[in-house]
Structure formats: C-alpha cells, structure tokens
Image 1 (cartoon, rainbow, N blue to C red):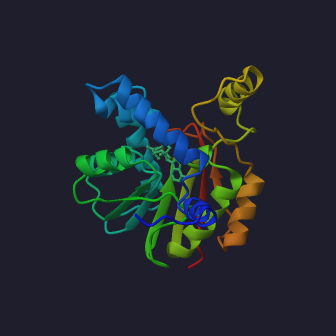
Image 2 (cartoon, rainbow, N blue to C red):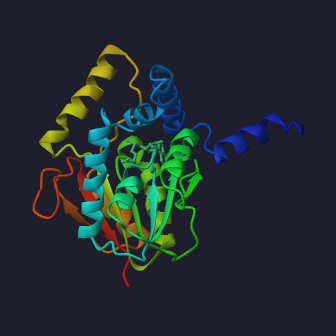
Image 3 (cartoon, rainbow, N blue to C red):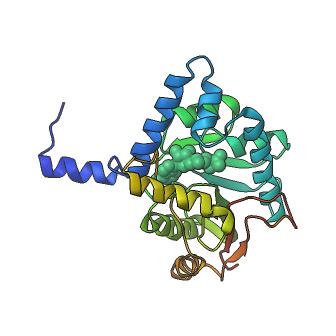
Length: 251
Ligand SMILES: C[S@@+](CC[C@H](N)C(=O)[O-])C[C@H]1O[C@@H](n2cnc3c(N)ncnc32)[C@H](O)[C@@H]1O
C-alpha cells in the first residue's frame, strides 16, 4: 500500500468528504438502526431516514411524487435525487408508473444498496462531496427532501451552485427545508435547543434556512427568483410539513 505524507492524506480525506459531519452522522445512524433491527433491515433503513413505519414510508414517498408532478415531472425526464436514502421517492415513482431517467445519490452505501435492490434499472451512486454527479445541462429536475435540513448553509450553497450547472435550461431544483418562521418547525428547533442545553449529542444536525438566504443562493447560482410553498399548504398537493423551495434555471 502506498503511504501518503500526513498533510496529503488530510487533503485527500477532506476532498472525499470523510470529515463531513453529515456523512459521519448518517453512516453511524444507519449502522445503529441495522444493528437494532437485524431481522428487518428494510424497516431499519426506513427508520434511519425518518419513517417510523413502512406505511409512513409509502405515504410520504407518494407525497414526494405529488409535489414533483405538480411542478412539472413528466415521463421521459431525467431526474437526480440528492440524498436519496433507501429510495422512498424512487419506490414511489415506480409505484406511480413513472418512466424516465433516475439517478439517486447518497453518502451511505447501505442506503443506496437498498434503493438498487428495490428499483432495478435506476442508477445509484455514492458521493460525499458537495457536487451533483452529472454532466453540465443534463438534468430536468434536481430534487431533495430533508437534505438541506441536515447540512451547514455553506454545503447547501455549494450544492445549489452545482445543481444550476447540471440542470438543463428551464430545469428545476425542488427541495424542502426548515424555517423559523414556520410554527410547525418549532418542535425541531426546540429539540435542538434541548440538545444544546443538556449536552446530549443529537443523532445529526437539524439545520434551518431563511428564505432570504435561499434567494441569495439562487441569485448567486443564476436561478430565477425562488418560489416557496408553506409546509401546511395543501392547495396543490398533500401538505409537505417541511417548507418547499422551487428554483428554476432560466430557459
Ligand atoms: C432524512 S434523510 C432523507 C432521505 C430522502 N431524501 C427521503 O426523503 O426519503 C437524509 C438523507 O440525506 C443523506 N445525506 C446526509 N448527508 C448528506 C450530504 N452531505 N449530501 C447528500 N446527502 C446526504 C442521508 O444519508 C440521508 O439519506
């Protein structure tokens, strides 16, 4: 084995994202869940991404597809599911009979292995760097649910810049986020404060964004002004609970 000098080793490891808090936390969470439910790995993986039961996993996934359909998803499109987990959206797309090019990217091998097992023919990839692994102007939609909710703002910013690069003109980035202005997100905010007050470590970071920041990220990337949907809004699809942002690359 070739040994790199210590400084080079550190640089290599940072480029690969090995030191990223969310990679470390999600890998640990998935392994702990699999250990606690050895006879039901599918449920363990669903719980690791926040679905207490398989019924929740299915209904939440169906809600994802309703949002995507509302914002223009049609057959034949090419989509990129950032932080795809074990395929909650991918499996719902299959159930809905959608046909198109799907790529799911995540930072935990066990999660993407489950997605590949459940959805043969869908592409999956392991990627720990804040990049969209797709050629320039190749995607119709980049979507991600409950991913910026676990990242530092700078990481979300870098993903936004790169999503712009990878989207076709007219393509969209659609994602969910927590915001302090939404009363229903108080529960998560208060849990954060409890962890800080008690010193008990959280399983992972729960991050909040402000709409002004998302507007700034969008502007820097080149997107048109974002549109937003409140988490409790049920006018066009089932309420998402997290707030939604829709960023469009000018045609
Ligand atoms: C709450 S789960 C949501 C999974 C999926 N988006 C869904 O809603 O079904 C958060 C996902 O983000 C992934 N993740 C964590 N850190 C990430 C990062 N730096 N980049 C991309 N995905 C990440 C986790 O491994 C996990 O699958």
